[in-house]
Length: 284
Image (cartoon, rainbow, N blue to C red):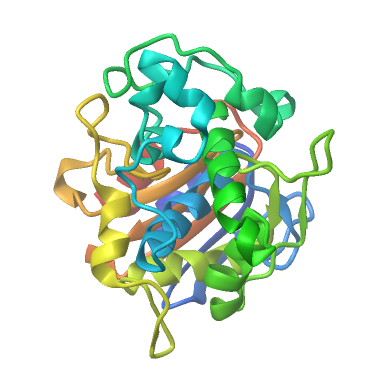
């Protein structure tokens, strides 16, 4: 890997932190503007990637099925033809038919997300936005009610605590709940752990946190967008087809590169930063 070339590209695009390592251990580090590996940073939409992994873990636990309709848990969705056909997979792959919106400070509460009308037929169109993840949160909240747990508590207990990943803070919405598509503040060294879990096919220090075959379901694209799985982006480089990554506004990224046995966390503050350009500098 060409670490210096990749770092130089990131530095030209307002780099704040770059950590590249293997098996959860930092190897190469570069920081700017007072950042370091332990200072929490907003992940923005990089937060979404937690929920794809949690969804397949929840399927393992018998809590849900990715192919089940939302209407199985939210009866009101059975009253509308299009909504009755939306599956949990559609929500996580952003092919639910819900239009653009619900990003940043505009993330709706669960109740408001459930009331949003569909613009397209489920499965036909990929539309980036935060509302589908909030609908998924509403479904998960109801499924977890018998356990007296929130989606975020389940995420912590099922995925984050087993790998020792600490979320420094999480945004709250107007009703006191925490959003799913954004809102996590995490240090670079902590986010690296999540990448290491994915790199090791769901294993952490000898313990299988998520089965490999379950985790692989996160990285299957849809007909509407072959480059987007369950809240994860898939490789933009044909010669490194195994790359998967989480992406957030301003150039936040968690890259998992199995063929290079590498994980990289990058924080920044630039709207001009491009994932493909960084990966080309790093790998080609």
